[in-house]
Length: 117
Image 1 (spheres, rainbow, N blue to C red):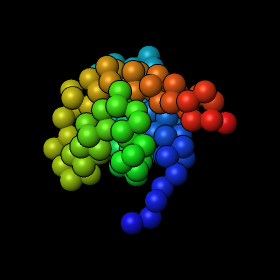
Image 2: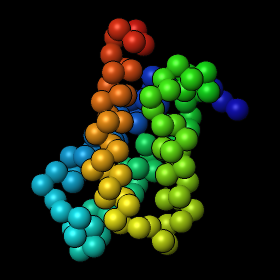
Image 3: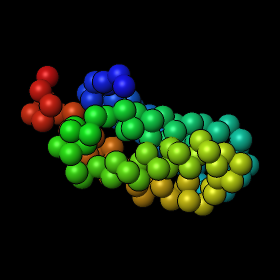
């Protein structure tokens, strides 16, 4: 298995999570039902967040236990393999409630004091 650079993967997680948050800014849950581009984009962005999380080596995941690694990766798997049964209520709740603290935690990890410049 190829070793992935944790810093690069964390940056991917952060960038795509931020993009998802920006995409829903000023939007409503109902927009997921009426805006196909929005729901496809959010699904894809969260897939990437989960894929990047899955590439973080276990020893690096252990260093940062405040990230719910298993949940993030499991979401990616549910979105990929259950593409035909995505529950937009759950997706919206994840973006609204779970992404902001994830972004804050990854920002903290990526600070020069934590990982080094």
